[in-house]
Amino acid sequence: MSALSTWNPLRELGSLESRLDRLFGLNVLAKNGGKETLTVAQWTPLVDISEDSNEYLVKAELPELKKEEVKVSVENGELTISGERKSEKEEKGKKFHRIERSYGSFLRSFTLPDCVNGDKVSAEFKDGVLSVHLPKDEKAKPKSIEVKVQ
Image 1: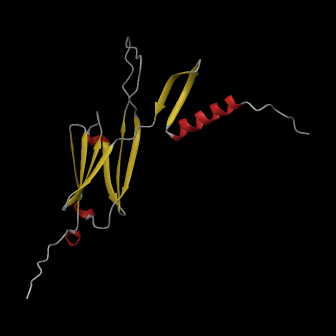
Image 2: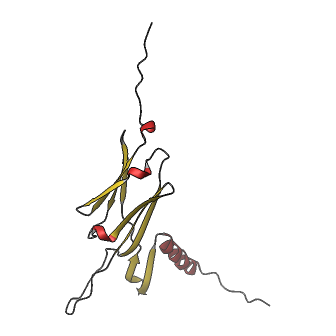
Image 3: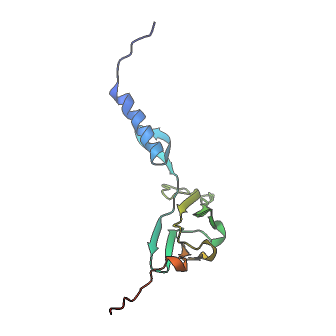
């Protein structure tokens, strides 16, 4: 025989909140009187992708990283940018009141258009911004054809 229980909508709101936290990559480690005491978010670098007649340009914001900590690869028509931003070491006598910046490993992957020449991809890293140049094949570049009138 199954027992009946009273429906409590507030209990379901807590469950919904937990699911939304997981959906947006938040991991609430502890709650104190309804207030979050520590929240850790998964870090994903922001990326801009632009195009001109010669190439695609992918720019990724990677503050406080060195070029040695970032890996860029092109394989099977996919661009992958990965790396890790390490958290600051705790120092004696130093107390953090708030930590909002995210740390940890990241991986961003982008499917490349067929017109990208994967053999000529280049990347540069300056002032915390990674720029990946993805040149287009010659056959993919727009061509102007003059039409002669007779």
